[in-house]
Amino acid sequence: MELTHQIILASASPRRSELMKALGFDFIVRATDADEVLPDDLPHEASAEYLANLKADAARDWLSPKHLTLTADSVVLLGDEWLGKPADAAEAIETLTKLCGNTHTVITGFCIQHLNEEGVHLRHSESVETQVTLGEASRAEIEHYVATQPPLDRAGSYGIQDWIGWAKVLRIEGSYSNVMGLPTAEVYEALSAFKA
Image 1 (cartoon, rainbow, N blue to C red):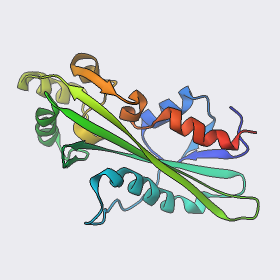
Image 2: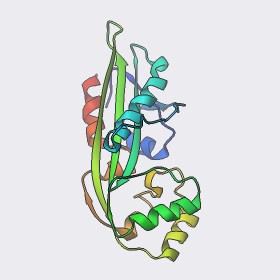
Image 3: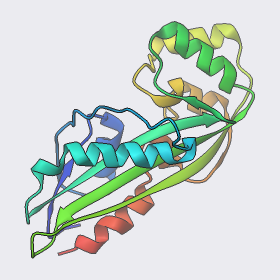
Image 4: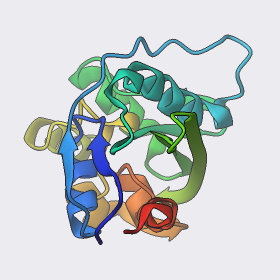
């Protein structure tokens, strides 16, 4: 789709780039350097969208009347527990041990910002939730997955497009692409407002 604005995907995630290419958008990638600190009183359910907006703040200088930025962040919740990116393989194994045999929630927030013709800064953000149920997995299976397909850069310590997604995901309620890191239907609809 041809847009009136050049998209700057402010994310180093290869999955998000892959999904944007699948949607047919032309874009350039510039990773942000946002300090991802959450307020203590922020509900876990709001954290993904909050972080997407924080990244948008860091990318604001890249805006022009011809450019817009797209930022996103994903979080994984198991009940009331917030599961971020693991610090190391041991933490990844611990996280996956909790997730396997249970249903968890993946929330991805995204933010689109631009300048209108009058130079006014405008922003749209939203978040999307997906429920994922993983089957039971043995310690050996989890250790093998973490060793062979290191998920250290992924919230919840796994990628749904990896082995674990094919072998252990029993049910998904909601957007599959949301679990990969970008709710493509919602992003496509939001970006369609800039159709040339």
